[in-house]
Amino acid sequence: MNISVVGCGRWGSFITWYLSKLGHNVIEYGRGDGASYQILKTTGKNKYVTLEKSVTLTSDLNDVLKSEIIIISILSQSLRQVLLDLVKLGLKEQKVVLSMKGLEVESGKRLSEVAIECGVNKNNIAVWLGPGHIEEFVLGKPNCMVIDAYNEELTKFLADNFRSNLIRFYYGDDIIGNEIGAAAKNVFGIAAGMLDGGGYTTLKGSLMARGAREISRLIKRMGGNEHSAYGLCHLGDYETTLFSSYSHNRTFGEAYIKGQKFEKSAEGVETVKALKKLGEIYGEELPITNAVYSILYENKEPIETFNTLFSRSSRTEF
Image (tube, rainbow, N blue to C red):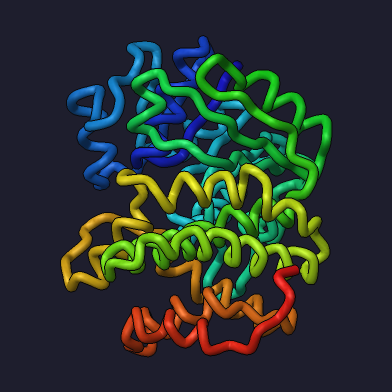
């Protein structure tokens, strides 16, 4: 199978490595002036993977259209422009797989909705989501992930062709819930890091349970299946994030509360703005989301802000 991967970051380079190991013909695209692309082009490897000799690296976006499947792994806020560029260059019936966990901040839209707005055929759009860190995958430690799409046939085709002993794919059947859950886990990952940094690590159990419940209510309001919040794309990935030293979002939260610099990208920093907006649009209370937002964007004191959640009135758990 001919596959193009857009993005040379840690996840994009892993996908290229993984799919080429499965025997697929892979083209990986990166911006010519990007550091990640230059490292791969010059050395054939980065700190995570060494690419197969069969992989074609390119900085020409036209080359991406040579494949029948295009997997996109870039920052969420860059997706719209990249898709518009691809459509302008002639994107038509290629299958587009979004392998990112976020929401568009300006609109609050799910990434598959952004793709549809850009002119991608709805039946050709899929998402690749779920738990797992590259640092463990490359050591041969397996995990479970999810492929979901608007088209059930596409879901099964991709999951069946991408599965291996390293990744067991489940067929997703709720693209709304899975996209929202995947994006939200990054926000709660930041909260978990803040609890770690403030010495309240044992509260992460409550954060995990109540965070999942918070997102289940939002998913239901948006027309998805509330039980998706307890599946691999949210709670499964959420648990991995909350307790992993590899998570950028958790590490960012810990560094933030300690007043330390964090140089890498943490998607949850932008996603919390979109998630807060969705809560307002759908009239759903999102206390943990709002707490993280107020800390990051209203300069509220972190532990004091989380403590205010304890002053909320008692209620039944579900």
